[in-house]
Length: 326
Image: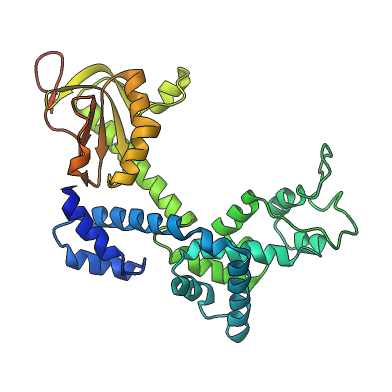
């Protein structure tokens, strides 16, 4: 779905006043029935991520963190089964998964005075990585509780990023049943952030790469994929390089990049800077497929060697002066 800048701005403006919930997405679909669900979801997610980046800092001041943590404690103290964290995130307009991370990190700090007792509650694999924080440099850790300081009342349990991520991916690892349930509620109700959303995005991206591969094979086009290119020593590569260039709408292309998202100004300019121009410098002109559409005005680099499409092109001409086989 290719949108004009004006059409995109109209959709984005509607998102300013709605919370990032699935109910809001359904209302957006009712407002713009001609747009596909996938396109609206991609725009919805990208616009919300921009909002979070703009407001991220204010949620991570020490005052904000202490306020959120105290409100969490007060809330679960009154009713541990209520969705306290989720409601708090919605109230302060912050992504539920990111709010869960703030509270989880603060919870781990709360256990700074009893690291051995805390680690004893963790699964063996998770305790190992956490215990390593206390391990002296160069020491071999043969057991997660071995070599921990026996008396360290003032030392903090600074959970590593990997430990936090592991707990967020599997809240059952959190050694507090109430907090584990609260974090789980945030993860499953967050449609823009969190490990569940990351898994879905990764699966969708892989699905479209497989789709593109199948279409290339169907057209009898010879190509090298990203894994084959990296095996040859390339560090930054597009998804597919055509071993024999083809023409699309009168433009020669040597490579194709698959993006399972909508191409808005922010993401497209970042891709141009970080990826597309590098591909152009190394491999020549190429094609980018934004499977969920893009802003029409962004397709302005065709003469310079980067084409945009919202799907697999149907007008492919090979060097044999004929269209690719159906």
